[in-house]
Image (cartoon, rainbow, N blue to C red; front, side, top):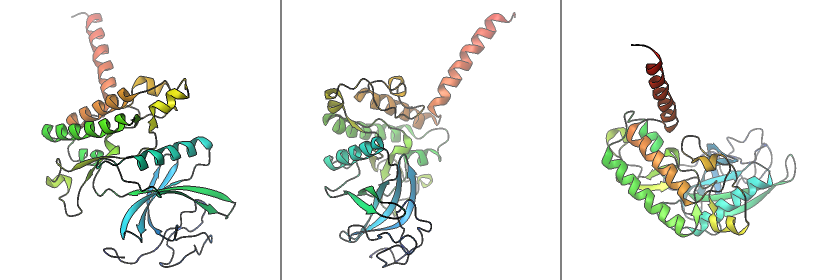
Length: 284
């Protein structure tokens, strides 16, 4: 390994009783016996967390000598596999600096035998070094600088232009799914090092091809949404198109400008309406 020292390895078997730490250089897990060196290329070195139906890891790519991100599907339902496969197909087809890069061979499956035979779908993608806009917003409780947000908006629109040109909709745009591609040496957000880095849209787990959905004559979309950002038709499971991404992007940018979570807007609006009614009912 180059810039990182040899460290422990993480087993990705969801049923492993002691997945970490495994000795560096081991081919098989000392706890469950499953393979650790994926495709004789990728070495899982840290768990990053979970999202949706998947577990996320940092992996070391011995071919490129770089860190990458490994997404492992742990949910065994057919629908989860369909969405996972769809995400992989979308990312492999895209070549844009605002989207994590996935090589053609970055989507694969590994066979497990302990405690039962099963396959794990895996997706290896570029690792984006930098904060999410949600993390940056934590440092600006009253809202981020206007010119900075405008720059993010312009970049986000260019990313959506590329997606929608390919008839792909993301369906989950929000501050936590937008990152800044920043070098490790860049200043931290609260030190002023934000605004003009490359914006990257992440988490394509809910992405879909609009044309394919119409060809199947689907009466409704899979009900995947983020409260406060998704449009009403997406929340109710109706058909959605590119306009759903613009709706979510608009709400995201207003939150970044104001520092206020979108769901609060509705509560405040209702409070203002109730206050107006009370003022009309109570004699002065």
